[in-house]
Length: 322
Ligand SMILES: O=CC(=O)O
Image (cartoon, rainbow, N blue to C red; front, side, top):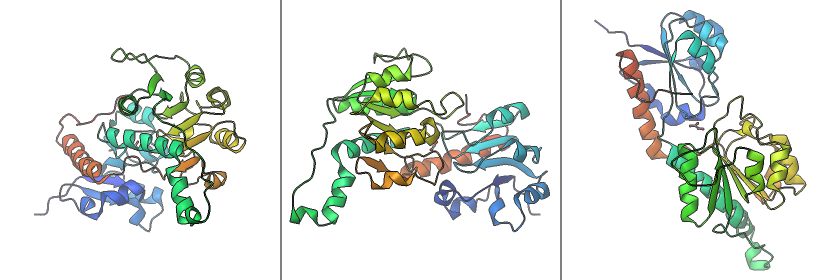
């Protein structure tokens, strides 16, 4: 007799879903119901499967809203491919007693690596010089500008969680001085702590945004913070786009009120403000900080582990805590 496998909903073919690969979704342990493969409009698809969907696999760009959850009364778990859960209505999940599991710490090193990579690229103009060389300008003239040294920079880290701490350790090894601001002072580090992000910005050359997006951090990096960072200041964002007031940041870059930016995340992904494309002092990447083969192998294992734990009433491997 054929045994029916537990149904797990997948809402959209986001980059994460594509990168997990077909083999992952051909699992013999769960049936992944892909709403986007159905000709039915989403609400109709969800109503049709409303009593059989027990879990949702969520990823960046596929929002799990209160409206969706209302149509799925049997859902007991939302498991995400990401560390950040800003695409999930967490309070509504809590209210409904739905468990949450995120990607835990598996991506921390990759994200910290990319943050440092973006910073080095902005300061030493790696991408800009690549463009210079490819345009054939090296052979014809030499008017390439000097870069800026990494090792002597004062770096302010916004959010000293696992990723922020990884960035701090890497930059210390490069000879930078680190200070930070975070929801709470961290007793395990001796870096100077600032309660206000503006004060941190006023006292550093580089601001690294390493926190999550919440109601409290939305547009936390605003005009005041950017002007405190100042003309020589560089900002790097590997958190979420909406932590920075993007319009204001673009204005500051256009008018030379900050020196440069390294950005992996944007406020309205996949849209990126066009003004940034022409700027040599800005380095852009399409939200790829976590995308390494090694971490994706770990991610597949973690997702399966969390789903198995949930369906066998065992503790989740990476339960999300606010
Ligand atoms: O952006 C990626 C993540 O939150 O894991």
